[in-house]
Amino acid sequence: MHLSHRRGAAYLSTALAGITLLLSACGGDKEEPAAPLPVQNTAPATATATPTPAGATVTDLLGRKVTVEKTPTKIVATSPSALEMLYAAGGTAIARSSTATAPGVDATKLTDIGSAYQPNFEAILKLQPDLIVADASAQAQLASQFEQQLKGVPIVFVGAVKYADVATSIRMLGSITGTADKAKTAADSLDATAKQVGDAVKGKTPTKTLVLVAGRDGQLSAALNDSFIGDMIKIAGAQNIAADLKQSGQVPGYATISIETAFKENPDVILVIVPGNTPGPSIGSIVSRSFPTLNAVKNKRVHEISLDVFLQSPGPRAAAGLKELAAFIQPDAKVTP
Image 1 (cartoon, rainbow, N blue to C red):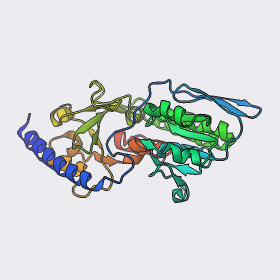
Image 2: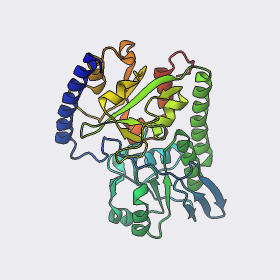
Image 3: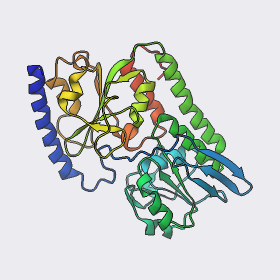
Image 4: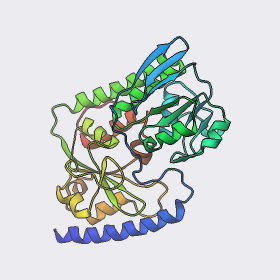
């Protein structure tokens, strides 16, 4: 390894250790972990809906067939992504997970049913909901608990393992809530953005790109192709230099990575996702100061990107996020803002 890289690795490791202490001190009350924690499902990225005289029968993002016998009026969304997708589809909620928000929605007026990773099932049942919208990405491992604890209440799992899943989930929710037209408009817009970006980068040489995620323990992870953002950077014209790494760690779609491995292929673009509300120097600025010979650093193409949009709350805002990624990865492509 080049001497400057060795020095940079030592400097970054020290800085990450400091950030770890800060995160530990200020993160105790945070609902959603800031490291890459969503458990991504492996079900097909499709969901279907069949209207019935009294409601709809759907196949959700976990492949479960669910019948909703009447149009629901008391809906509980159990994750940030679920809440955003529900409102994008034209639905409304009476309750949400602790830190969930949605554009244009005063989430403080909705009942708090606890963390997305530890929902309070007793509190949910007290609300007498007629639909639960759960998260196939973050709550797949809790599916059996949902079914046992909330027996008798229809539960549909929406999710975003891939970009296309967002539109699929929104259409499904629209069929259930009786807002199919609004849901179709929102879903069609997401699809149109993917087509616009795909057409704009078509024929261009893929840009060597690396997505790094800084965890609360100071460990760096790289996004693989089968992560949500891994799928999005591919659409945006990237060559993911971490694509051949083997899955490692607890999170599907990511691989723990060393500094040496991260920068071995000399990426042209580095995208960094960091825990929110972190005081002190940013990971992006540390990388830029510590590794001046990297192509991404020399050309000022190290960018910090949204934790919410790309990792913690993937949902309808991914359309704007995809355009942002295209601007970073293929800046010469003509993508309408």
